[in-house]
Length: 468
Image (cartoon, rainbow, N blue to C red):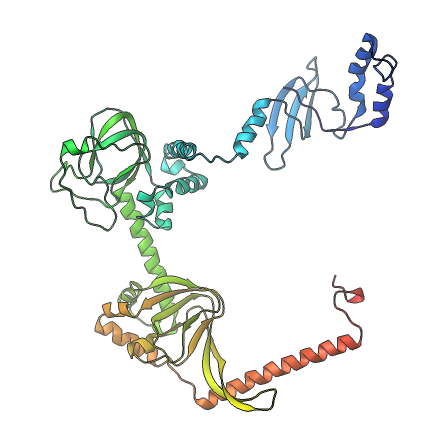
């Protein structure tokens, strides 16, 4: 393998080299042997190197290292008698075809689904062969991306659950043909080999009852599960007796390799996620001033009904005069509270008429809530609420409040009634007048500023008014 330092051409030396007597010219078609030897001995002189004394070919490489960040190679070389060593750093040309073919295959996108699938299975096997405590965050991320493609698994779990499950998946190997695998304690993905199901169904969907089908062993003999197929269950299924044949498969071709998610690990992870979400919901509810003195048992009952959702900016959550569809706890973001008022306006033609205007009478942000009194008293809400930014909120739907006991419902109403206030017509009108005066004053100031700048010949962004 030969490396050359990056070089530029010295055209004066090139011209001098090409004009050497005896080289082939336009009128002389022959090159003498002496001229050829001279050219081969001195042709490197026409290169101008930025790395100093590196104009010769490097033939005795003792150490090489590649820096991924700056794309440079560090090469340590020795001269012919190995008496000196020098280190050269720069972008060197690698003439090894294997190096360039590897880069070509790495950059080329593979479109063949069979090749993609086989690569995925191979990567999954190499990742799960590591012990869970040996896997890095990058390993977990790659495994998460692979497991999302298996619909039998991804449709049963959320992204958060699947990401946590990637830290505890196990590698299971069976080397003897004809053995029975009891899959009622875990979910399996076949990575190598094949199995035949003993009972039907051979996979249980989370949250659905397991109803054995009336099938015989002979009818299942033609069914074969191969690489990429799944069997087993995420939720543990206890059989009527030890060694129950529920969700069993039989090893057909060996060796068989499985990715296994143990049902105990799945239960532990889902319980932990549920506890964290419940704690977060309780913390949000208790941060609202109406719930700060609530007992934990009542907060827990309310938190079980909360569901997370998001709304973009300028979304009307509830309109004035309508029943509120849910109780809202603001987790992140801001909302405007608007009231409707009739005002007497004058058109450009001088006609006067009454129009309805929306007046911003308040603002709500993190740790505020609304909708309790409207739902519990079954009265229309007295204000409109519009999102000022994107908001993350927890909501309790009207229908789910029926799950609360009477004591909690009474406590919910009493806690929020004292903060329930309505504005009189005069207060709303005064607020509208104040906002309208501010708006007109700001518009007047802007008009005066523009006229003054135009009269003075001031053009922002040009001349002396260019911002630096």
